[in-house]
Image 1 (spheres, rainbow, N blue to C red):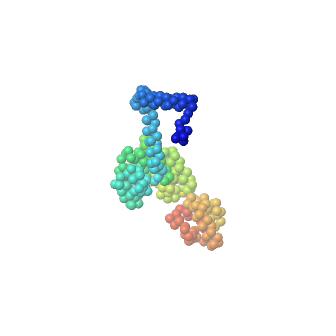
Image 2: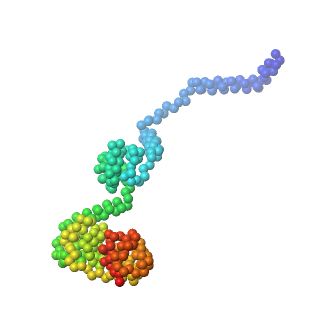
Image 3: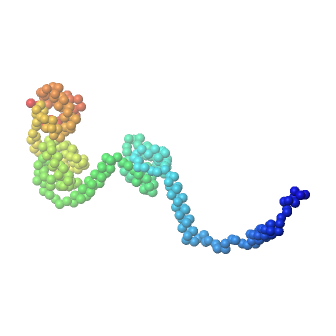
Length: 296
C-alpha cells in the first residue's frame, strides 16, 4: 500500500495545479464540441476570379498535351511513309494514292499536285503544307514559271513594232520583244548569248539561252531564221593557250584539261576530228565545238 500511496500523495499546491489543469481541459473540450468554427462565407464558383483561375489551369493542360505531341519537321512529301502519313492525319486511301503515284517514277512538286494526287481535304492540306520542303531546283522552277507567266501577261498586249530584220543574227532587242512572252530581260539575254557565240550558226542554239521557255523559243524560230551564217574567228588548237580554248562556249574546265592532255600525248593534232578520240568527249556537241577550233 505504501508503494501506491507514494504515487498519489500530493501537497496542497500540487493538488491545486492538477485541479486547474483538469478545469482547462474540460473548457477546451466544451469549446471544441459546442463552438462552430466553420466560415459562413461561401466562394462563388462562377466568379471572374475562379473562372480565370480555371482558364489558366486549362491552358497549362493544353500546353502540356501539345508538348507531348510529336513535333513535325520540314519534309519532302514525295517520301511520306505509312507511319508518317498516319502521324500527319492522312487516311490509308490517301497514303496509298501517293505511293501508287510514286511507283510510276513521278514526283509531286507543289502542294496543289499533292492534293490532286492524294485528294486530301483543304483543311488537312492547310495544316501540313507549311512543312513541305521541295528541292531547290523545284522551287526555282516554280518561281521562274510564275515570272514567265507575268511576262506573258504583261507583254501579251504590247504595241506593234516593225521588225527591222528576220535574220536572227541581225535582229535587235526590240525585234525580239515582238514575240509574246519576251520582254527586255529575255531579249537582252538572247543578244548577249548571240555575242558569246559570235552569232547563231544553228537555229536550235536558241534553246540554249538560259531559262528561255521552249515554247517561247519555238515562237522565236517561227519569226526569225539564220539568213546569213556568222563569220567565226577560229583558233589553232595546237598553239592556243588554255584560257583561249576555255573561252569556247561549249568547253568547260574538265574538257579543256582532257584536250590539253591529249595534245601533249600526240604532240600535234593533224585533224580537228581527232578530238573525238578523247575519252569522254561530248560527241553531241562536236559540231558546235569545232566551230571555234582548227588544226593547222
